[in-house]
Each structure stands twice: as C-alpha cells, then as structure tokens.
Image (tube, helix red, strand yellow):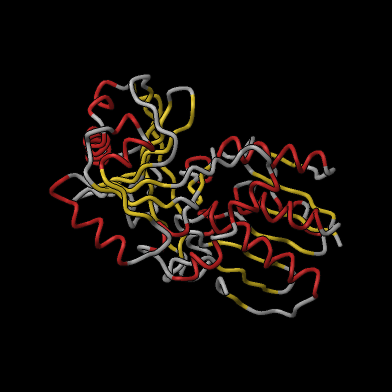
Length: 328
C-alpha cells in the first residue's frame, strides 16, 4: 500500500508516523516550505484533557488522556509532565469552583501550595486547582522532531507542490489540510485563535498556568529561554489576518493580572491561526472512496491527533469499508 498525506501539520505528521509504524509506504506533501507553518505551529501544546473537559465533550478526556504517553514514546524527552495550574484573582475565586464542577483529576491548593509549585506566583493567589497528571510540549520543536523521526524511517517529504500532481500513483490519499478545507468540507468552520510570545527573565514558570479571567480565559505556557506563550482567543471567524488591537490589549491585560512583571516583558511574536471545527467541536475521520479526511480538531490538535491517527491506521490495516466516524 502506498499512501500520500496532504498536510504537514500535527494531524498529517501523527498519521504519517502511525502508518509508518505499520509498514505502510507514506509520502507527505505540504504546499508550504516547511512543517509547522500553519495553526499547528501556533498551538499551545498543552496535553490537558482534564482542563479541556471543563468546556468540552467527555470524548476529549476519553481520547486525550493517553496523548502524553503517545508523544513521549514518539519523541522521548519532549514531554514535560509538570501538570497544569489553574488560578483566579480574589474576586473571581468562584470561577474555580465552577471550573472544578465541570471536570475531575485535580487537587485544591492554597497559597502555600501555589508558592511551592510556582514561586514566582507567591502571594498572588489564595486558591488554585492543580491537575497533576497533565503535561505540555513545545509544538514547533515537536513537529520538527516528528519530521526527523519520519525522515529516519525513510518517509519522503515534498514541499511546495500539489498533492493532486502525485495522487495517481498512490492507493490512498489522506487529507490533513485543516483550515484549507473550510468551504470545501460540509459543516467545517473556522475558529480564530490569537497568541503572543513574551520574553522576560523576571518570571519563571514550570508548567502552563491558566487564569480564569472575567473576559478572556488566558493560558501562559513556558517555552524555555525566558519565553512564554500567551493565548488564546476563541473567535468564530475564518479571518487569518493580523491580531486585533482589542485582543492584544486583553491578552496583555490578562497576562499582567497573572503577574505584573509581564507588563515589562518584550513582545517577541504575534500570531493568528484559524482552527477548523465541526459543529460539535470534535474531530472526524471520514472516508470517501480512496480519500480519507482527518479534520476538525478545534483547539485540541496535539491532544487528540494521536487518537485520530490511530483510527486512520485501523481503517487501512483492517480494511474497514467506507464510513464516517466522530471521535468514538
């Protein structure tokens, strides 16, 4: 069997690795000049199924709870298993109770417990939720790492060319083009996410911190070398244009609320990614003849891509006939 995968984002690369593990000949085609050029390169990289369950379907937790193990096996040393810390300012502590009521897998912390985990936040918050079994990774490093693993396995990459030019020589086409399929795939919509990178040596964080802010839920994910990713908005739009002034101000204000030192940080990068989503915000694997489509990851790309890649491998190795499936 020879397979061509369209798209070198998180979906395409995880599918490629799963198929290569099964001995299937795989080629990866990407219209850009490198991996991680789309929304996948702007992701938060949080492997946080319990936190995501607060606002998502139970299936996100069911399929996402093994994601950290998959990534660790694929890329040893890339996954940081320090958990997730969720905080709220004094007037918003009720939001912590609401958050806790919609998920599981957490411990309550007081100010002393917060300080023990994150000394930079000492004295800033009285209560927090700690999800100790969650993890995170750097998406750009992870995607570059997957490419190296695939190259070592002999998987060819074809950049800057159209998959249609090669399709005739392959048994199966796997479409992992993400937002590029909006307008072509029924029910698929765009959800705009905006982020920024801040640089400061005045703060040290060991894990992603989520701030339950009144207007915009914020996460700050450490990237090392005094860099922090701050995100992310969730706007119902497929506009991939530059970040809006309003979103930038809200993200900066929320980061300042987490720690005032972010007010003096350098803004190193701004980014906007359009995340494809179906009405239920769950990804789907669909089959139409010899074309398999994997799309609709919404904000759960790195969390759910391993599970969906496993579904694609099951289809091809078990010769399952045409069907349409959500995450189950």
